[in-house]
Image 1 (tube, rainbow, N blue to C red):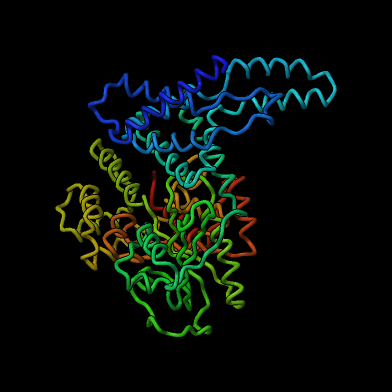
Image 2 (image 1 turned 90 degrees about the horizontal axis):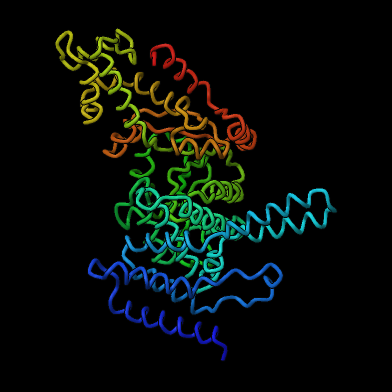
Length: 498
């Protein structure tokens, strides 16, 4: 036996002894950092195989399956802090060979005057060298039992680490980008399975859909039964590599008209045993879409799900032509609070509060009983933050036109890098929907009032216009909006001087 083979066997035995110790004693604060780092380094040196040379890349057998299993077991037993350290060592020490890439870049530059075959081969060599070394490990893990789900969860950890700012850096970001690219390939629309969820679906699926519901929480099993019962549809994308796991879930209400409040959908239901009357189904309302896997953030699933569901519903109801969301507006209240805080500070410096007209400010003062000269902006901030204005019909009537035009501007005019600031708006506008109608008192639940002052919005899907709308939005940042919405935007621009 050669020296190199004996050394490899010794490393494998030593790493396995560390793994066996970890099974009974997971890392904790009492384990010395040097021991933790040593165990990590030994494991990674063994399970992350060297990149084969370009000439032998198709002749080298894949890494042993046991290496993938050892890495998964090791990672699962780490505490969150130590997982971050392991990912840092993996991304920093087993990425791209930068010297080799620089060398091949020089060679590629030298071949530009030669024949196309030589240029193409030089490009292929460079492309091969740009593959991170750890990608082989990730590929091996994906082939292990439960490996794809493991990588989805690992990316969720990565995103959390990056958001915490404790483990951010170019190497971690590159690992996240590599993993996102791999997941995008594995979860491409052609590999997804559309599943309609009914009361006859497996209990485990129903339980997970109930737990994952992020927009309108499911209250109990009766509520869940109604959401998959008459005049309702529930669809989910699943993947063969993650059986029993819904990836993204869409809830649909089949209604006579386009709904303008969520209470009529999640609180008022037909009898559980009612038979659907096709003549009463004129519109399909997408009232909740939830991504269930944090690790698939940025992997396009929801837009494909809506398009597939539209085709399913058209096949079931050929006369159905009205498709619309009934969407929450997360972030509107916090944006408005920030706006009012800025006005309050400006007023304290002697500037005037221009968000409302003079007449509207006077009416706010009268409705709240403020003394002349009292800070009306601060009082309005307090009322909106506490939701107290809903208890006063006079205040609600006064604030309706104000909040509706502010909300219209928030959805239409507030941008991030040229696109809609609101994430839900950005999602539907990318899909080609039209910003169609704002609905007053559409969600009077505490969550709805706190998040968007009770306002909800319909994004209307005019099927013959979605492709054009999507292109205009993505390329020109142009938002398709109805005349009603644009009228509210015009009112904002007339009354507010920001």
